[in-house]
Length: 377
Image 1: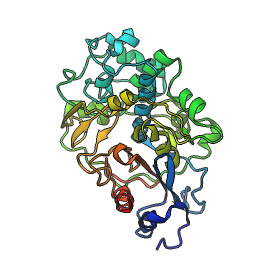
Image 2: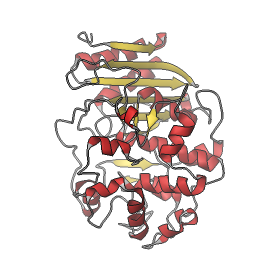
Image 3: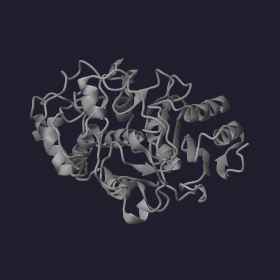
Image 4: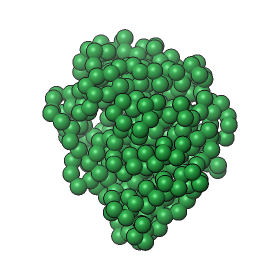
């Protein structure tokens, strides 16, 4: 079925259909290399990998392969904040300025942590022109965030923040816990028996990163508006004028994490499994999970061309972008990656790949895999 493409890994007996769907994506020539993983009740039930991680299609995708997950990393940010909430270091309903006083500049003194994470704070993009390589300078971006005014009245509409949300969350974590996103991932989740998920990669990790085949066309963002232009369409909307290696080495938490599917599905398992990690340790409280998954705003997004229901870092699955389950939450990344959190089934799933598509969310390759997972439950 896979036309000779190498496919390996785990798919427990009830999930035979998932392996078949994974192989069919390759047979249909919609993949170059990919991995897909599912955890239920803290146990791996699917952990598949296949295809190739190089441009020539000669080097098989392996357990060592890392793929850029782009905005799927925002689910990881949601988990890290929920952990800080559990520890009493952050309150979702507290003003960001309580922890970061300078953030109050430009009339942002009442914006809460949950407002930022649910994309209703008016921070979808930076309004003042800058060299696009500035995104690699953490302090410079934070200073710009401190000074900017909200792009619309907070809490009146949702407008997706592709980049800034990662800097706000990262700076919140630095100021409340003493460590940023990259350091937390490296110290608490990487290492022997841990997860291969990184932000700000070292040279030896960059060497493991897969070749990326760019999408055949740009995503359809729908009708333009000034907020959408700042988020995606200005010359300074995203990092630029830097090498791929410089970008991978920088700390840009909302968009440049790298991982395999096992790591991405595994690290968010506590959000679905009553706060418990894969190893059984409880790291999230019930109150923190409830706060993370509470719907904060619903409406036509000012940046993404969808009607969305935002929680504190994840979307509710109201559009079936994350499979068939109405109890699921998720996030997608540029090119097709996605991560799913479903507490009703104590399930998390993740899909990462290196052949990018123009789908903003709900990539058909991930949908067929998720449909097969739920068909097996």
